[in-house]
Length: 447
Image (cartoon, rainbow, N blue to C red; front, side):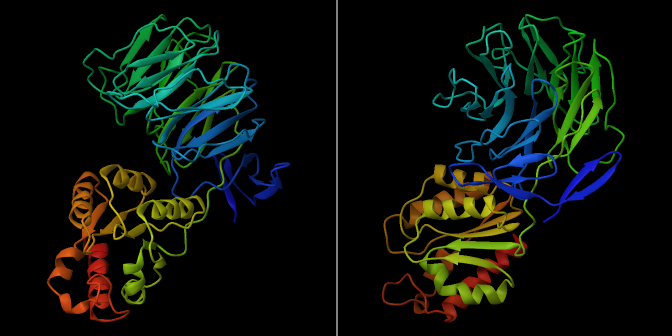
């Protein structure tokens, strides 16, 4: 596979290699200047970037917890087993480690980062959207989209948690002298706590929403960046932007150069844009798009109609097994995603073998968040969980725009002649299997 490194001055094509990580025997994927434990899943979304202490490198993280270490940044680990998506990354004051923070406020530490606490076990009014490290205490703050602040080993200086905001908060930046922090909202509104307020875009019509804020170590001002790469400087120099450039993916984050006089943007696709004294040290390696664009994971019922499904959906990648539980299906799909083998469209045929919950559905959709369409085949089984499971699937499909239900339960109840003695399983390639495959195929193509 070739890694494409895009910079404004040109494009380089370089092949990644692998190196052993030591006693564990595991391998690191090495791009032109980035090191990773594995290729990022092809459909992963980058959510943050953090610079090393001397500015000679940076770490990049995806929403599913994959990390790339670029330049002189040391690869210290990643966190891909999550209850909620990762929303940010922050380096320790000495650059010897980093934190990942998830939307539920879970905090994950690597290198010399010290765990001071989290909201992972708390009920939050709104999800966490970012974090900042206190350069003086080494503690950190978490910020939620309502501007609620959670301080761990760092002073609490105020929040907007009790205020009615025009737009949600999208991030925070700490002052380099540890005196306080700023919060920024999607309309560019800025809220200062313990630090000077230098201005905002709250009263300006923006082409795209603000997605990040960073503080300037030299001027003690700050910058805001919008998703199109438009840059707004407040008591800080303007070094450039991508506001007039057609981007492959939206900008998702901004970081200031540790030594001052520059900043970087990072895009959802891992593209890095540098301005002023900040330098480019590479981009992550992503897995290639899978050959099959449709993935199907199911239990013994899918075994019955697997061949018919392959006829109706050419090239479908089917993974079906007798007795499979919902949780096993989640693990299989997560593994496919990590290996870059998950299709753009997914068929889920699970639930025959036990009860499922709304939380199970949400976990499945977290794994399949980037799928263009997910077809859930509801269940027909003479067990007490049939109707509750089907209700979970019906409710879940209303909460996610890319999810639909193939109503096998209704069609099956109308055609008892299709089934064997147990009233649940079908003759392989029989009329019931053909009908079920056709139903799934129709929902896949027509929604």
